[in-house]
Amino acid sequence: DAMVIQNPRYQVTQFGKPVTLSCSQTLNHNVMYWYQQKSSQAPKLLFHYYDKDFNNEADTPDNFQSRRPNTSFCFLDIRSPGLGDAAMYLCATSTKGRVDQETQYFGPGTRLLVL
Amino acid sequence: LAKTTQPISMDSYEGQEVNITCSHNNIATNDYITWYQQFPSQGPRFIIQGYKTKVTNEVASLFIPADRKSSTLSLPRVSLSDTAVYYCLVGDEQPTGTASKLTFGTGTRLQVTL
Image 1 (tube, rainbow over the protein chains, first blue to last red):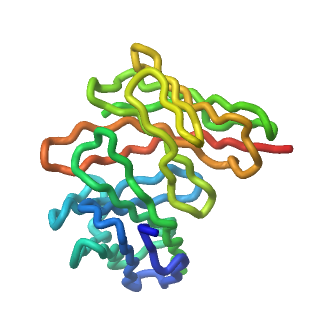
Image 2 (cartoon, rainbow over the protein chains, first blue to last red):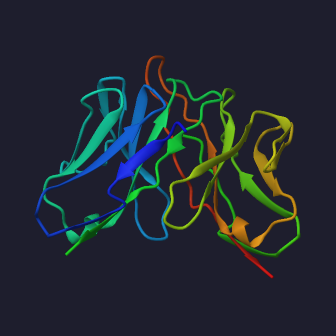
């Protein structure tokens, strides 16, 4: 089945140690998103790629970066994780640019723990 | 930016119909209304989407009045497995050639019990 895959499901890192989360998709969608979801809160968009174009949200900290080497893969890099970065990180994809009748397909998420 | 307002939580017994209402007073003309479901430790999952009147699929129904300032998600005969958070979202209009973005509100935490 076509899907959005996130690995690993759980990631433990140390305070200040760079960490990379990965997302892949078999849907061939041109847009990929990264969301951060803290406990008991709604998902919050960090940034997205429209094809190769990177779009950062205004309030996304510089500590968060992303790479999209090809259509199928997208990475979230946290350069110096702090305790406040512990959260579920969700990857999503969508098929076109406009929101009309468009849906986003989410992966299962990677839960990041910072020690 | 069209904001949404939903009840923070709802409780229901198994087998009942559940209606979750969402308010979106500032919805734009071209915005669609979309509902997502999220189970613990999983990503949100698309449930249903509509523009006006009524939409029904195998999972739920969506009722949208003529003024489109609110919408109601209806889940028929809920089961324990419907316990989840339900998010109502309206589309953010973006310039041509840019991707759409979803802004999640607080969501409604539905608890279904026996």
